[in-house]
Amino acid sequence: MKIAILDKATLGEDIDLSAIRALGETYEHQGTSPEEMTEHIGDADVIVVNKIKCNESTLENAKNLKLICVAATGYDNVDLEYCKSKGIGLCNVPGYSTDSVAQVTVAMAMNLATHIPEYTRFVSSGRYTMGGVANCLVPVFHEMSAMKWGVVGGGGIGTKVAEIARAIGCDVVVCRRKQEGDFPLADIDTLCRECDIISLHVPLSEKTRNLINRERIESMKQGAILVNTARGAVCDEKAVAEAARMGKIMFGCDVYSVEPFGKEHPFNEIMNLDNVCLSPHMAWGAFESRMRCVKIISDNIRCYFEGAAQNRIV
Image (cartoon, rainbow, N blue to C red):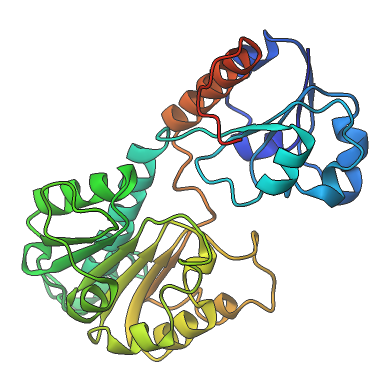
């Protein structure tokens, strides 16, 4: 078996890939541009990708390809219909990053709610030392136990965030398709209108694209905290940037419609604001999470060629 890992850099240099290497002849590429796809895939039976687009234009010369393994839970970068038409299997890695993403989501919300960077900067700038006062209480912050947290998406990550939010005292509501779990439900418009904190945990689809649009942002409370660790295009990024710049919302984000986003992206105008916390799509990537991901990918490959249907999408 021949396996090509096409964007190894996204997994981190500290991760042991021996579980995948043990399955066959493995070719590893730090990254792969669309123009390099044919060369890097070669005659591989399996490709491992993270964010690389897999569609007719990038796979048309992959004559030996039998399986795509996405090193992620989401697989919106893969053309499912094309894979079905060519008999190419697809496996994802569900659930591996739940704790990691939930941790970063809550950390972002707490960071924004408590204004930690501003207080840290007050000390590191020397103003605390020179001020002659034992404390500083500006900007004003509030206890999270006084806040209502709306979780959009009731899958594993959303549920974990809801559990943590409840543990720190928040009143929690969840927007989800099914009546499941022990959290009260709210539709998206009610949640946007009533919650102090809103976190997004839904896959990208035509139904969720621009789910957080200009009208829903305008309906939010003044100073509401919006955290997106789902997919960038779940939000109208231009509308979010305008709202953050005007001080309507506080905004935390780890995901973007284009990654990395370019100089023309609206978030360039807000990245240095005190009410904004942007991170480089790292929420999924705790060490334990990445090791878990690699182990599950190796299991997916082995099971696929043994005829078992583990994490099969196609």
